[in-house]
Image 1 (cartoon, rainbow, N blue to C red):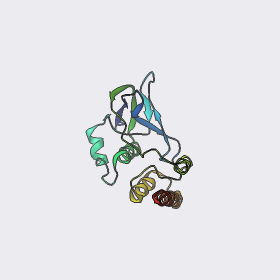
Image 2 (cartoon, rainbow, N blue to C red):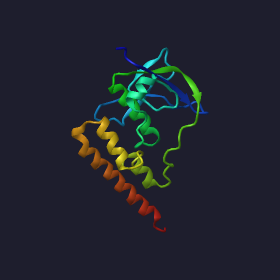
Image 3 (cartoon, helix red, strand yellow):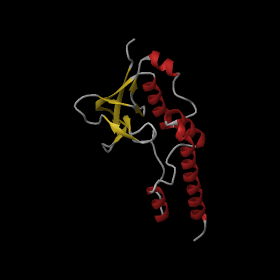
Image 4 (cartoon, helix red, strand yellow):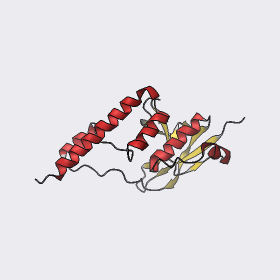
Length: 173
């Protein structure tokens, strides 16, 4: 059988910065650690997953994947779909030129205090996902299953730090 190919186009924001496209993973045990690929290359390059602002994939593959998993919100669903597609043997190629312009989806607001910037810089504030269930499903599906207790502890630690920060911020000066 022929290997299905997914074509991903990278998209830039109004300022010219890349906002969406393809990603390569650094490690199987750290599925959330990815880096962009294919931007301004001479030819299309392979990727492990994508965030889907412009993706072309064969209908039979989309049917086999059963579409986006409804338990994920925004970016997680896209990245999950890409990882699941590669597990089924699909090849992901990122087009070498920008195919459109769209601003990035808003992320967390910039921290306003020195403490908040310190906490965010040292990785103790969760950047994503929208809750533990989403995080757990993603990490179980795409991480190293034997590291799952570590993933859960890391998430709980980050969530605790965020709650402490919010309580400190809510106190009158």
